[in-house]
Amino acid sequence: MWEGAPGGETLPGTVTLNQGVGTVNPTLNALNGTNQTRYYIVSSTFATDTNRINVWFQVVGTQEGLVGSTTACGGTIQPNDHFVALPATGLCGVSVNLRATAGAPAPVVTTVQDVGPWFPHSSATSGNPCVGGSNPYWNTTGVPQAAGNPCSSNGAGIDIADGTFSDLGLTGTGTILWRFGQ
Amino acid sequence: MVQLLSDSTILCTLTRTRSSRAVTFDTNAAGCSFLSNPITAISAPVSTVNTPQGQYPDPTAVEIQINLNYASGNYTVQSCYPLTNCGSFTNMGTVTLTGAVTVAPLLNAASITVDNVTYQSAASFAAGSHILSSSSSSVAANTVMAYSFFDGTNLYRTGAPSVPNASASSSCPWGCSGGTCSTPLPPTPSPAPLIYSVTDLQGNQNPTIYPGVPTTFIITGEYFGGTQGNLGFCPDGANPCVIPGNLCNLPPGAICSTLSFLQWSDGLIEATVTLSSAASGAWDVYVISNNWITGTAAAQPSRGIVTPSLSQISLRSNVPGPPIANDGDAIIATIPFVLQVEAYNPATNQRITNVSG
Image (cartoon, rainbow over the protein chains, first blue to last red):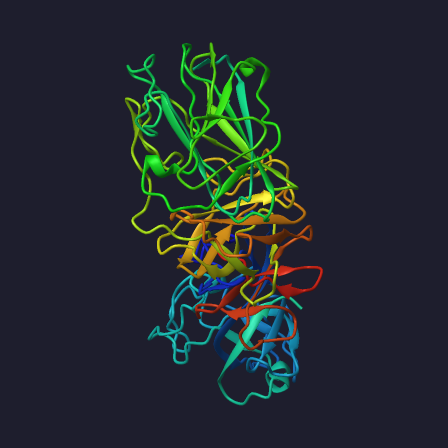
């Protein structure tokens, strides 16, 4: 039994054990709110197992820059600053864990201090022609609205402040993994 | 001729029992024609039971206890051994009656004959001979017949439907009508099934059966028959060990309804069984062949041992793919992943490989 989430997934309902072991191949798209995990319960006539799976999102991350600007959370961006921006409001201060690649030895943990990239955006501008409200893709399809959208030049799903970007060993624009939590 | 009352009992003691044998009660003499029955020539009830298939220590005394409960009336009771007059049955060797034949109080007036000679305290007779016990008593209607036999240590009992004129069924292979029973004899009688080993899927003897858990085990041996038969389970040393019609005898509340067979051949059975969650101790497992047993049964008993474990079985699951981080199972959204579920013994932390389903 899987924890429900607005991800639209079709998840396997049974697993068959053969010689004591069995596998299923689910796909998870989304989380509830800013939870770090999805949980599930495997039950049989003889035992029950409840477990959790950390859900990471693999998106294009862009370097925020904009030193000296004011963020949506009210801060002023400092040189070599450490934070991220996600394309939805209401996340200021929420912890995020980032990795450049799966298995990267050093996690980078920071908080959300800005909104973006690309969404929400009320009216098209020369710098951002995208128009739309918040895009909490981690609660829906798992894919940023900007990805594949022609209004976006890079399809990014997260902006990363300069210091955090450097800590991840990134240069320019790159695919990163992130999840909520420490 | 005897008149039987309810729960009337005939006790006979036989020796040198090495295989299955049969006892018939035929009030119409159709199954065992050496005895006529002038009183019950019309619609006489007939029933036949067979001893459970298996091999029993030799020499040993076998006590056959016959409880007759039929419709009220006067009947001739006839017990036959072997069943040569009721179908083609293999010569089962010489049988000797020894000692006193105990007859239930209500049958004190019964007479016992061997080949039409009155039984005294002992008698010898060859295959094809007949034991006849006759008495007369009133019996209650719509009751059942059962019998037991003793292998020197344990008393085994079995029952058989004895409704007159009953049709054959899975629990009663005999169909009886008008005093004649149809033969359940297969075309090729087989020796008793012999169990060489009962193992789990790793080859461990006397496999652990986890109570309440579908557990698979393998029985090797011979004479299991080419068609799927059945298995019976009894607590080891149970006395009596009743093997009812469904051949899945367990204590009250026990279940084995999930007994299923993955393989069945003459020399190998792979079965999955669910014992009750309350099951414990060692259990005997019996192979029940569809074939009849002849007197050439081999030297080993047709029973093996399975041992329900009192240890718990647990489930655990994980994502066996390469980790994203060292903080637990993790996946990447929108990408299919493998979730593995495993049954394991928490005491040993080892996977329980004979659990399927």
